[in-house]
Length: 38
Length: 156
Image (cartoon, rainbow over the protein chains, first blue to last red):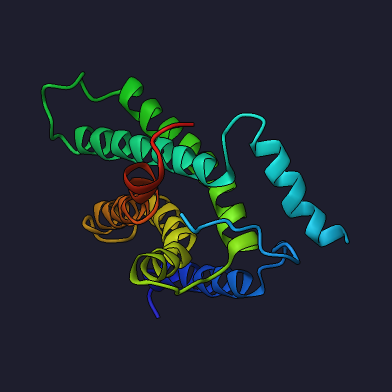
């Protein structure tokens, strides 16, 4: 595998990590704040 | 509860300056997009385009680097609120597109930074990565800040 794959692999790992973090919503308030997504 | 307190503390902090956390995100994202435009413009100058701009050299390179660094910093509060408080949502097409595109932002950013440092890659790799990142940021702005400014309110 050439070096060109390194940015794609690292980027892909970060994408997966961000998606997992977004699914976890670790700091979401326990009651909805009525905040729209923007 | 400590975790719920993080969201409340963040909201309290942000609303000392902005009317709401959404307004703060809209303005931070706007700053990031403007700086991304500076990034694309200075990069084009570095590549010998846009000859009406100042001569290629230290000033252009420094402007390019610092606009990128500040743009990255502007995205951090947006990331914090979107990812850790709101999470991945799909209630309608706009929010779904925003969530999906936003998931890719830091991955594309990391890839672009790695491409900058890797001189063994073909010449098209860096402008492609840079334009992908700038386009992604613009798409995120269009699906969030523009929506906020045009349908909710235009103000701090």
